[in-house]
Image (tube, rainbow, N blue to C red; front, side):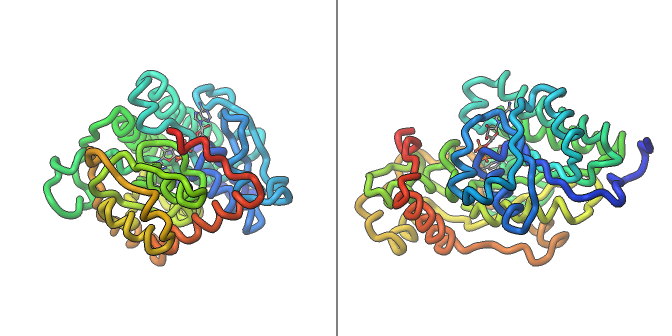
Length: 339
Ligand SMILES: NC(=O)c1ccc[n+]([C@@H]2O[C@H](COP(=O)([O-])OP(=O)(O)OC[C@H]3O[C@@H](n4cnc5c(N)ncnc54)[C@H](O)[C@@H]3O)[C@@H](O)[C@H]2O)c1
């Protein structure tokens, strides 16, 4: 094993994607992208519920997904998933979101930090096989807006997270840097803002997706915050993860993402133009979220030219269309509208 080579060498191996947390929202969209282009991804998740995947994939496509049930906090589970499946590209999304980390920071650290270390350790042990590691960081590594002043938060701004979740993500970025420094293990940390689309049914910024779903089923819904947000369509996010996994990038990189930066009343206005029924059903109330939301994403576009940003109107239209299809076939789960 060569520890000092500044890339993850893996010549002549068949491609095999391992996606952790892919029974969740973004991971399920990554699995969908992979299956649609003919790959057969391995999905590693602790959850037994495959509903987010089956909302996006046909039964036939589901048979292309290999489901592995495992716990990211258990190094043996992660080791087996990487080794037994010959994973060449590891996309790590298993994690707990902001409210769950706030409610139980110790569990949050076990899953978000120790779980990520387990992924890096398995990749280090199998560096002759694993070609790339892309992991979900978050724009929550930045702190509240008032710490940065008005305007766009530039690349390289200090990381001053205001939540345990953000601190855990910052810790992962630091560990990724040390793995490159000490072991020559390259990785990419992706920092999404507020991702929306089918499957976004939990977490602090799930309100806009729930407002779309509520409108489709004709129910009132109140987004529990006002102020600004950066809304990123999930297909774009999924494609960025895949693009980074296949780009042979070296070093411990991080990319901040940017979608449509807007105030919540602007989002509701756009929703009303596409789904007029929302004008009577959807509203936003409460304080602005204590997070920054206007970020410079020029590093991503510099290193990966041609990354596409779906306009909000198009993302809302597509999300509503999938919800409508699921409703017609009796597969639309609306239990999240209660939360
Ligand atoms: N959704 C967003 O807007 C957003 C924004 C920034 C960053 N992120 C990050 O992206 C990643 C994916 O987000 P998401 O919205 O898809 O989240 P999600 O909650 O929908 O999915 C997370 C998945 O991780 C799995 N998981 C949790 N604990 C596990 C464990 N111990 N072992 C194995 N699997 C476990 C869950 O079962 C779930 O399927 C997360 O790391 C999240 O922090 C998301």
